[in-house]
View 1 (cartoon, helix red, strand yellow):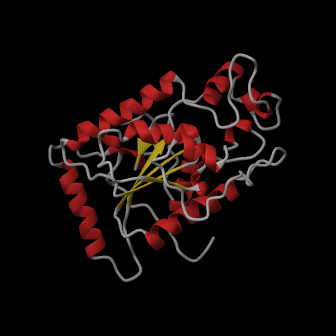
View 2 (cartoon, rainbow, N blue to C red):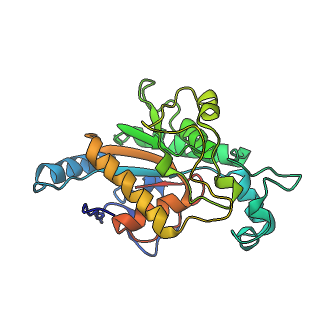
Length: 265
């Protein structure tokens, strides 16, 4: 996966604790003092100032999309019944629910994104550094989550870029098949696409499910893109469970089960 190596700096966040499995306040920051984010930003700046040649430190806010209709289907038929080798995941719906392709957020999913928005606005009062560069999966549930999460938080001129490699583990399950680029652009005209983003979804395969190792390769490519191209120190990615899990593995972070609508660093 290339020569660059990534590691996680531990000690700042509750997600570093293997016993922690609940969505924590403050996006997991352990420090609960009023100047917590000012101190945190200062420590990151100090890490970069004293870093040896070839070493950089960045903070990545990883947000999982809110609940989508495919998540409801998994509850209805149980997760095991929706596995890739079974009947339901290969369909677009059951006559009651529509979960593919590219399902929308449920009302609960929108509320989960609003909760994330409230957390951002609360932490702004304590100096949380805002993302300077933002990326999103091309899937509707991720873009809408990003839209709601950062409403009234970021300056309007700061746009989130849609990146193909940040999408969910794909193949077989119709919920992970994306729409055409032109359809996404029509629904989300304020979201620019990365260079080279193509019209059709040529990645999704109705018969072959992407392996975890292949998702890891995509996550590594996203990290390489960030460290190659972005001078910014604070980054946001709105994505999916399996991509975030791969991102964690590539960085050597401990396992952490992020619920729908959750966000961590």
